[in-house]
Image (cartoon, rainbow, N blue to C red; front, side):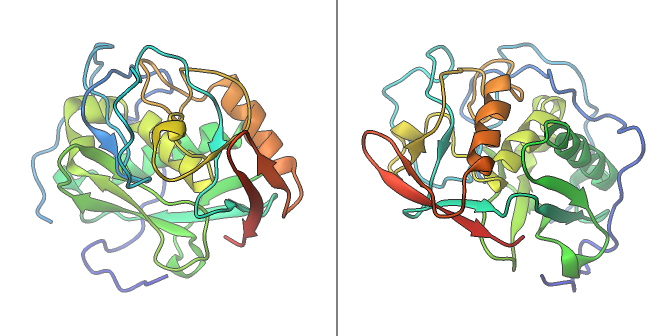
Length: 265
């Protein structure tokens, strides 16, 4: 991974008790901001939001989903995996290391980003999914880096699906630094880390890139955009199943069959 990034400077390490990080139960609403997975601007304090406040959505799957279903009120099938005719994941038992930086963030929010990403990673780690996240200060050993992506109207962040190391980033866009975006930042980062483990959006059945279904229904999945989303027991259950299957195992639903493909983080 490239280490010469004067804009970002030295790595930011999490504090023992994340200051200002949103809680796992931060409210989610429904608006047009999506997960996409510079000059500094004035910082905005973290504060509680109403359940109807705008939700920050994700660009990790850069393909529009159809608008034929109410994402906020209708249950979705869960979990979806698969991309590019395979189900990519990191080898079970892997430690997925990442680095974030002090510099380059609106309002000098590098420590907040570091704390909130580690809180999100720790929430997944506590579930014993089959892989673990760990921060590092060494860019050479990082699977991905967390950096500011600038302004991307309508989107809050973008991650990636499991793939070989080299240039992988979680881009955090300016919408994440609004009051609503800050208040739900930890949930958004949990969502992006779900993509990095190989999970698709909860509504992947409405996206044009095919996915395969593994699991049961849950409209509050962390991989959806529902009100009050957070990591659900079904997210944990079926991600554990996904990571328990042997490499090469085909995951089959009524429409597609994609084999699991393990990558080294």
